[in-house]
Image (tube, rainbow, N blue to C red):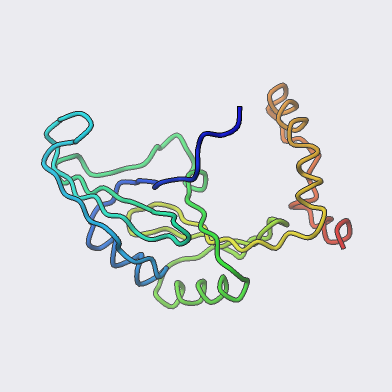
Length: 183
């Protein structure tokens, strides 16, 4: 069966302050506020729970949304999951754009990690004012890389399922050897 999914309609996270969040994403990432919805009850469950739901334009029909929930306990994060794990990766068009974004973020006092070379792409990492980790990524893959990874994807997953140790089929991605392998 083929995928019944056409695209991601929107991805939603919780935020501490909807106004601050909308302004931060517009200022630092150029993402415009496209819709604000507020209700006193949850439409799907009828549960009384006032919220503000904002939607931001993430480009090419992609939407990033946030809920501010003022009557709930302050938001936290899953303490059993490392902070680097759960993140939202957003694609940019070039290394120039990536490096310019890094400079703007750092000038604004936002701590940025990277650029990190993942062979297929370069990326920077930082946190929004809600504590959500964001990644800006620029595709940099060379001819043959995607095909090489496609050939080993299931073998890697099967080996991982058995051993829970990192398979070495694509070690070239982070050991630097891809620079010689894919010229």
